[in-house]
Image (cartoon, rainbow, N blue to C red; front, side, top):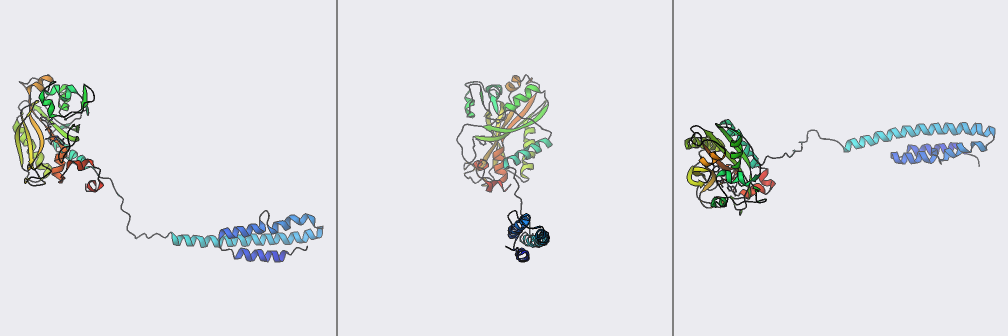
Length: 339
Ligand code: YSA
């Protein structure tokens, strides 16, 4: 059968020029010039022709091949340009559009209040120390003048880990640990997490934070404590606050007192946050008991000091107007994102 290369070439040219996309173009190219393509078949069949036919048809076939390859390249470039233009249109970016706000983490209100409290005491010359959350019975009780079977142990409902170790029920053991290793005079604060096996309500948690304070020197008195307390509250609240000192009892202080603040949430009228009292108990405090000094080999005739343990959660409640301590531990982002 005579080979009509002219028709084949024209047909392939029209097909290549009218391809609508790169895939279609590729398919057409292969239909003519691929391994099983129509023009490739012609080129492969040259061996079966006479010498004259081979020369003439071979020349024509090669010219057709070159022409189609050129058209293919040309169409490919046109289609590529067209596709780029379309995707640029689709991926158009409005550089004037307002940016998306990145959500950032927030410091927990308890972290904020602890940092602020520590900063204020540091400004007053207090060093910051720490103690372990798992404590021995000795540091948590005995060294603080609370021997075994002493009824005062009931003041701290305890999570015992075994007969000798427990989750510390207050930050006061840090006093002992510090005094064992340092000589007076000094002033320290010790913030930390503590644990109590007790029922929860709006102002009681089983896990909460305290800030212990201890100042020991030659002539430290309760007046020094009161002055430091006033400075502290003034700086935390930056507004007048009503504070009262109540006589109390702690085995490791004599005299002992507790510090109440007029409830900021009800302004003293009584609410569920303060148990209708109108006052919130903020800390226990007192002058260090001579037996505590003896336990750390200080001479009680020579040294005096005051100590306190303030509840940081309650301080945060009063500072930020949070009505229930349990909100601090609920992980509710609606609360946390306000800080
Ligand atoms: C007393 C004398 C010192 O020389 C030194 C420290 C102290 C304080 C003592 N270690 C103590 O823990 N006293 S306390 O049991 O009365 O607690 C102190 C403060 O922690 C309370 O005034 C209150 O603000 C807070 N607190 C107590 N139980 C709490 C609590 N906060 C939240 N949840 C609880 N369950």
